[in-house]
Structures are given as C-alpha cells and as structure tokens.
Length: 131
Image 1 (tube, rainbow, N blue to C red):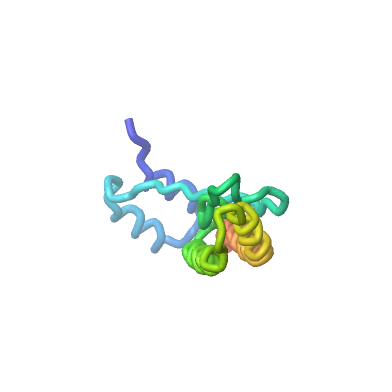
Image 2 (tube, rainbow, N blue to C red):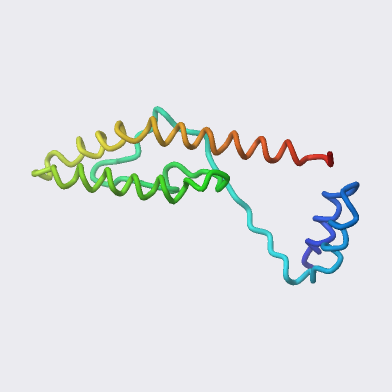
C-alpha cells in the first residue's frame, strides 16, 4: 500500500496554522507526489574528464534548485567547453583541453554549489519548527 503523503505532510506541520491544515485536508492524496532531490558537495580534486570523455552539468556538479543555478551552470559549462573545443586544432590535444575546461570551471561551479547547499540547509533548518 502506498503511503498517504498528505497525512505525512500534515505530521510534519503539526502546530502550524489552521489554514495550513485546511489546505492539506482539502488536498486529494492521489494528487501529491514525492520527488526527492539530491546534491553533492563540491569535489575540488576530482577531474571531470577521463580520456576524451567529459561530464558537464548535474552529471558532475549536481545542486539543489534553491538558487535556480543548476541549469545555468550546465549552460555555462557548455559555452566554455564549446569555446575551448573550437580552439583545439588536434585530437592529440583533446585531453589537455578537457582538463583546461575543468580548471576554468571548477572554482565558479564549486562556489555556486556550496551556496546552493547552504541555502538548502538554511531553508530546511529555518522551517523545521513553526515560528
């Protein structure tokens, strides 16, 4: 049997205003879906490439959606990577180009990833109990 997510959400919000409970009581349980989100701490010493294969976006630096930066960082990755690949004139230099891509992106991505994780922690802890 599937868990009644409305009842679960209500249990998380015990002590909150009656309006919250009224909205939850009016919510059909079958209309609620659980969608888990995952992130990972920045990995500063791990390359994003192996040979001539490179990872970009959430595949290598997943982040919570709190800052709206996951997709933005993937687009920036693609832009920087395309510029570097355009200037690479030999397949023998490809591995070096992919390492250069990592070096160009790691600091900015790690900062955004860290800030996204911090924002997530603040949101979770701030709303842990009613005010």
